[in-house]
Image (tube, rainbow, N blue to C red; front, side, top):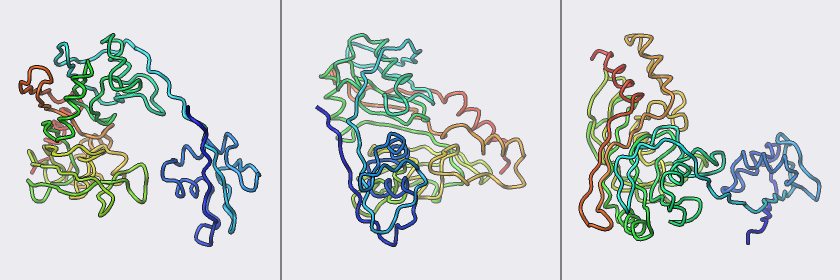
Length: 325
């Protein structure tokens, strides 16, 4: 049974004196986001000497200690929803789907329905018992704003077999990304551990310690006037935000990525204004999971799937091809 948790801060010293309470608490506790802190403040769950702190902008005081009461989480069971699915392949053991950009894979805070899981529960009636209530059948995931292929298990044996392949890094996955700038060198391997950013808990980062081994093989497929490039990435490992972090490391942030690039734009006067506007305001991270390969959990045959670029991704490439070399 879940119980409430009480977090206690260190004594505020001169380094933190005057900092906003919501920022101070999110810095103190890496597993509580600033938005969660703000919700807890609104609920009256933040106190100092039994006095409730009700204002996010309250400035912490030298020598104070603050308590945060976090109520137990209540996990809602996902409901089946009649949401269209692009099913690439299906048999008695697996489903391969082509996920559109904008769809979250499984329910999470801020996305309790409209997810791939909700759609799968409607499409496949006997999926609910596999790999837990919240993520039935889910073996791996891709970001909400990334489009492309995923494999879903329809029974426990298939789930275990596919999970083992992901753990062994034997799954073949190819992604295509459109990035600002041009990789140098044009082809290579990025071998750099990835962990939670020490500066922004919403981000992952290349870290020197306490990270997970991550390897990305990349190849530049097309260059658009030196301003942008189409890059193919093959994942040897599968870490959170791996491609976004690794390409950022070599100075090539994804077009449309609002988390890892906020100021990167095409600014050259040689590029037509409508092209710059389209690219600089692309609505989502330009990343597509195009191919997926694995060993079938029952037949032991090699399975390989591929999908075309979605319309928005293909249009982005068409627009960029207007930039003259």
